[in-house]
Image (cartoon, rainbow, N blue to C red):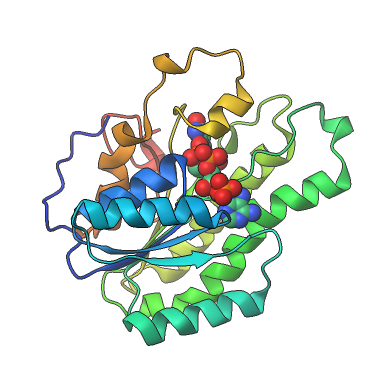
Amino acid sequence: MLDYHASPDLLNDKVILVTGAGSGIGREAALSYGAHGATVILLGKTVKKLEAVYDELLAQGSPEPAIIPLDLQGATKQHYLDMAETIKQQFGRLDGVLFNAGQLGALGPFEMIGEDEWDSVMQVNLKSQFLMTQALLPLLKATPGAAIVYTSSGVGKRGRAYWGSYAVSKFATEGMMEVLADELDNTGVRVNCINPGATRTEMRARAYPGEDASTLRTPKDLMPLYLYLMGHDSQEVNGQSLDAQADKVRPRADQ
Ligand code: NDP
C-alpha cells in the first residue's frame, strides 16, 4: 500500500463528486474525502445507501454532503448537463470527481456475450463517464488544481478470458483517461486512473463467489492512493494509471 499520510485538512473547502458512493470502494472514498474536509456529492443508484453514507458523513463531523440519485444506465446527456448546472449553482465549484461506479455484467465466453449485455456494461462503465466528464469539464477547468480520477481494473490492462465486456470497458476507460490527460496537460486539471486490485466488496464477491473474502484488502486499505490523487500533493501527476495496492506511485513507463 502507498505510504502516504494525507494531512487532515487536505481537502478543506473542496467539493468532490463520487459516483457509486453508496457502497464498496465508493462509500469508503466518500467517507475518507469527507474526513479530510471535503464537501462530498454522493451519486449513486440506490438512494437508501446514499442516505446511509450521508448520515455517516454527518456523524463523523464532515461538511454537509449532497445526494444525487442517478441510474447511469438510463441517464442522458441532458441529465449530466442539468447536474453540472445544479452543482454550479449550489456550490460554485467542483474540485474533483471520482468515477467509481461500475457494473460487472455477466462473466463468460466471448462468443456468448449478448448485445444487450454488452450495451448495458458499456453504458454504465464507459459512456456515462464520457458524458458526465464532458458536462463537468467547464466547472473543473474553472477550479484551480481540479482532479479527475477514473477507476480501472487489472483486466483493463491485460485482457483475461471470460471477463468480456467488463474488461473491454476498463481498457476503454484507460484510453479515455490517457486522451483526456494529454489534452488537458498544463490546464490545471489532471486526469488519472486507479486500479483498486482485489478488494473486499460486493462486486468482488460476485466475480469470485468461492473466495475467502477475509484474505482480501478492504476498501479502507486503498485510501492512501485515493486521497493522494484527489489532493494537491499529486499536483504534478497526470495521465497515470496507478495500482492502489502498490507501495509506490510508479509511472506507467516503469510498470
Ligand atoms: P460495488 O459493486 O461494491 O459498488 C459499485 C457501486 O457502483 C455501487 O455503489 C453501485 O450502486 C454503483 N453503481 C452500479 N451501477 C450503477 C448505475 N447504473 N448507476 C449508478 N450507480 C451504479 O463495487 P466495488 O466497490 O468493488 O467497485 C468500485 C469500482 O472499482 C468499480 O468501478 C469496479 O469495477 C472497480 N474495481 C473493483 C475491484 C474489486 O476487487 N472490488 C477490482 C478492480 C476494479 P448501487 O449499489 O446502488 O447499485
